[in-house]
Image (tube, rainbow, N blue to C red):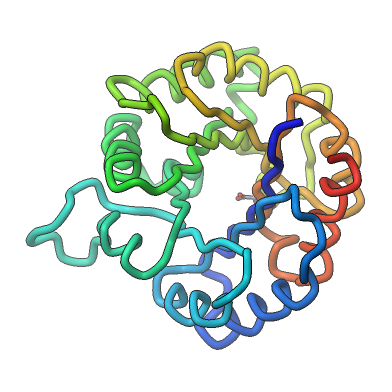
Length: 247
Ligand code: PGA
């Protein structure tokens, strides 16, 4: 069975000290358990360094929530992939819907994905339809556009790529997508992204310990990207345990 991923997206919720404390709690609670589950924590930029220090010696990986597409230069306020690599990040979220809502385009996401792949980090590409698009029966059309434009022209041979199906209407709303529906979306994403050498599809959107079971037992679901539940060490660890049980 393929590797499973449980990833926490802490958004802009914690300062550096709080992030380091939470990272230590996750690391301590995890210990050597769940060896088949890759655990990744994505704090905000100013907390990356503190979390990296807190995680020293642990198998919990560090991820960033965004990246700029240029490698270096006069780009005030931006952070490049090599800077993220230097600070110890191994994963980078690209194209989260909260950034798409701030007008991040498919073309920009394509460039960000290229920057991440080029520097040798693992992208977590986020895709998903809004409530209106879902109601209009356009889910697959949206997924096809977002996935194919993000992957256009990318050199994926030998690379690992994570794609998180995150229906926008399920993010932070408590409205979780039915696991069977998510499984269909995952299969569709895999069919669009077929050239990706090492592809894993994750689900994200109001994942909680109470609803994780239905997802963890599906072959189509290689893991989860959790927001709210990742801010509580116990809840987050129970997501990891759910995947460990099914592994
Ligand atoms: P949520 O967020 O778990 O709080 O819905 C998920 C995400 O935005 O990745």
